[in-house]
Structure formats: C-alpha cells, structure tokens
Image (tube, rainbow, N blue to C red; front, top):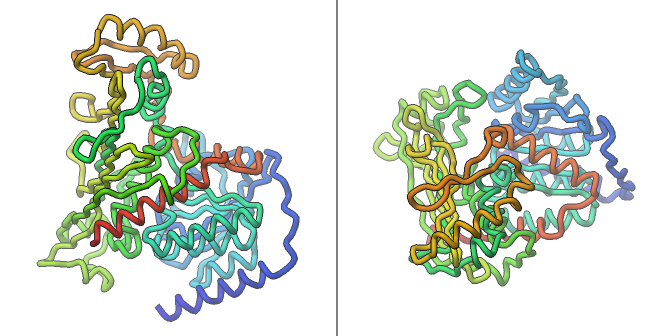
Length: 462
C-alpha cells in the first residue's frame, strides 16, 4: 500500500511538472486516418478490450498500454490477441506495453497518445482521470467515473481541468445505443401518442428502470474471469453506484432529452437502500480461479460466505419527476437467459414499457400501452398516423396488436448486441473530438448523474 502511494505521489508530481510548463497548442482533430493514438491505462475490466473489438480508420493501430504487472493486464492482452486472430474480420492492433507499479507516472511522462481509455479498478480511477486531463490528454472512461462523494468532488475538478486544457472527458454509456431504449425515447417525444410525462409519486414513479446482472457470464464466447477486487466494493464500487450509472443516465437522457440539468437544483433523493449478494467459496473460485479469499475481502466474509453490496435501489425526483432505479446481481443466469432489463415511462396518454422476460424470449421488447380509459380506436389511428416519424429514422419498425396494446417490432439488423455498443460509443466520441466539443448538455448532465449516485450511496448507508 505504501509502495502504491509513493507511485501515485510520483505520478501527481510528474503531472504538476507537465502542467506548469507552457501549455502546448492543441492540434485539432480532423478525422484523418490514424490521428487518434490510444493509451490504455490499468485495464482491469473487459470493457477496456471491447473498445478495441473493431478497428476505426481515425485510430492508429498501435496502442500504448500502461498497467501494473499481473492477471488484469494479461487477461486484457489475451482479449486483444483474440480479436487479432479471429477468423471473421480480425483486427490489427499492436500493443506497446509498459508493466510497472509506476504506470501512471510513466504514462504522464511519455504521453504516447492523445486519448486515454480506462476501464478497471475504480478505487483510484477518478484520480487517474484528473491527472490525465491535467496533462492535456483526452479521456474516454468506462463507468463509473466516481464511486463515492470524495470521488465526485475530484470528478468535478476533472471536468474543469478538461475545459481549461481543451480536452474531452466522456463516459461510456452503451445503453443509449440499445434499440428498444432508443425507440422508447423516440415514442416519448410524440406528444400525440405518449402525452406528457407524468410526475408520479414515490409509491408509483413516473419512470422505473430495473436491471438484473450476473457475476458469472460469457463474453465473446468465453467464460469471463473476474478479478478478485471486482468483489470488493471499496475497489469496484457498490452496485448502487456502478450499474445504476446506466439507469440514472437513461432517466436523464429519455425524460429530458438534450436539456441541461443542474444537480444543485434538479435532484432530490427521496430514499435509497442497498443489500448484499452472498457467494459461497465454490462460486467465487469458479468466477475468479482463486481458491481462497484475498485478505482485503475478509472484511466481507460472514460464515464462509462472501457478502457483496452489489444491489441497490434509488427513489428520487429529477426536475419534479419521480423516478426509481434498481440493480440486482445474481450469481449465474438460468440456462437460456442472461442479464435483463425492465423499464417503464408513464405518459398522460400511454405507457412505454420494455420487458425482457420469458414471454419475450429474454430479448428486450418495447410495448406501447394506452391507458385503461383510452378510446382504443382513436388511439390506434393516432399511433398509426405518427408511426412514419419513427420509421423515417428507423426504417422497418412496425407495430403488432397485442392484448395490452401494441408491441413494437424491430428488424434484427438493429439488435447488434451489447458488445457492439462499445464501438458505437467510441465512434460517437471520435466525432466529438473532430467537433472539438461535447454537446452543451453532456458535461452538466454527467455531473448531475454522478451527484445522484454518490448522494444516493450516502443515503443508503445512513
């Protein structure tokens, strides 16, 4: 621990030295081939590799990787090698790897790239992000960028540093690219169909988003090996500030599209709670390939079970609209199933509901359901008349009458899968680099999102 603290201190000293020098004039991104040079920092999560599942013309094939030596780094390099050697559309990444505990200081001193990608241990991630921005390097960060209130305060400083240094900080919000979520948002912006968004109440929120995840899963066709620290909430973050990052983001993105939010005025945490998922030794071993719990996990072991605060629920208001988000982590999904998502937006005319259960074949499916007192004939006519607005953006989308309303039929070409969404986020970020800025609402809304999460954790703990 002392050794790591010395390394961080050295890195911050290096950063300060760089920052004190005369600021170099930033070269504008043009979209030219190979002008973006990636740096991967401490890739402890498989999401880091998924950014490189495909090549991008704008991105140079050589990637500088800085990390402590160990399994996290080795697993990352194996994933990239698997992409390079696959039969179908292989990639051509070349990994320039530095192994050492002083990885952050080395990266800041060498500055071999202009975009840093980070997805891994979250304990120091916020500090790494800020140090990188202070050095004038753009950052594309996996969620969460902050896992507690102290991190949130550093994150605010990081955004200010990005502004001062003319670089972009952006987090990887893959769920904005899931087609049923996109269409839920699109239908909600048809006032004749949806009406206005209800205000709701704590007992009956206007918006509810729930997701169920699993510790043991397959990624790119292979069993996912979790690092042991993934089960330590002091390093990974509790569930209420981890996966719920996506859910809180979607509440903001769908309910108030492109609206600038102010966390000091627009957010009120009504209630929050957290609870554990308990794993036995065999489950831990199957997931991590370790036969014993590391010392840092002993604090969470009770009667031989590893008790992880991976579950959480937040009830809050956003600009007066009541929302509820919750995340549940189970160990393994039943055969033929996987992670699931449920979402409802309640409007004055209709509810927009995403279900992903057995009836849907565990595939997310969107439904448009008019209120009980609706004139179904008139509603159907209105819905049919406005469907072309959706089809203009997403050709092939159709409607099918079901008992509760209408199922939205989505062509298979739009169901690209979760792993492909990382590439879509990266492409969007590459365009922002060319634009030289993020949309005006993105930064204040990222700050609002991480305030909501960190504040909810405080409430849940108390």
